Amino acid sequence: MIARRRGRDEAERADGWRRPDASMSLLSDLFSGKLLDPGYAEAAARRAASGGTRPHGKRLQGGRLRGGGVLAVLTAAGVLIAVAGVQVRRSEPVAAKERARLIDQIHARTGETDALQRRLDGLRADTGRERAGALERSAAGRRVRRDLAAQAAAAAAEPASGPGLVVTVGDAPGDGDGDSAGRVYDQDLQVLVNGLWAAGATAIGINGRRLTPVTAIRTAGEAILVDYRPLTGPYEVTALGDPDRVRDAFTGSAADRRLRDLEERYRIRYDARRTSGARLPAAGALRLRYAAPAPGAGG
Image (tube, rainbow, N blue to C red):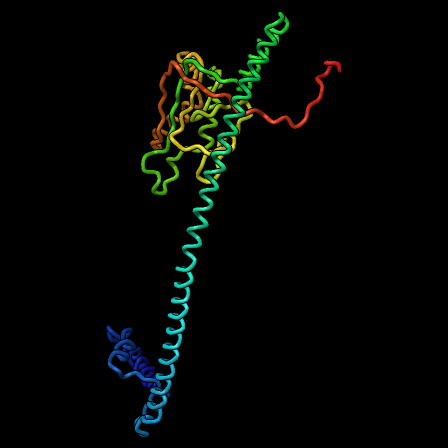
């Protein structure tokens, strides 16, 4: 058959004429059933001569075997799923009890920590009063007291209150759908805080948490940490100081331009307002790890 097709093609080339559908002849033969490999044709002839009983019987036997194997696999899978479901149902009460126990422990430890913090604040207040009374007894003591007050204000060791500026930043509406471009990150708060310090703020807090010169603003997962404690948005940054002076110095600064750009491009929340009676608590005390006499301080 291949030789005939080759002879026909050669004859068509010799005559200089070619059928328009010659390139489709192979597909035409396939669809019409005229093209069959000689080996396949011989096997089909032998099968027709033998009646097709034995090969057909083998195929049925193989089909039964394959069907039985599939049924066995499905049965085993069903048993495994059923056993897994029973185990899950049995473990649910245990997991629920363990979760409830952990929640109770968290609430108990949180309550203990809050109580200890309140006690610490009270002891600090008592110590401050005793120290102030002792220093008031002499002129040198009064000078030391003024110096301590200035240092305490710089280190955020004492509560602060007064007029100031409150800047609020928050995630863009609807950014919980997976769009992270409209979120407020730790770098944004860092830039904002540094801009307010540069504008003349005397004390700064974020969501009521007082900042110190060594406060860390970092990100852990989706949360922003201030002194390693998580905060949730929107974030209110309170800057104490002359509101007009702080606002005039902050407006147009690099921090203000950055936040304005984020507001325009990604729709984050950014606004500022004046306040006449803001109050910020004292920051947590630093833990003294080591100490040494100052040069020239003597024994």
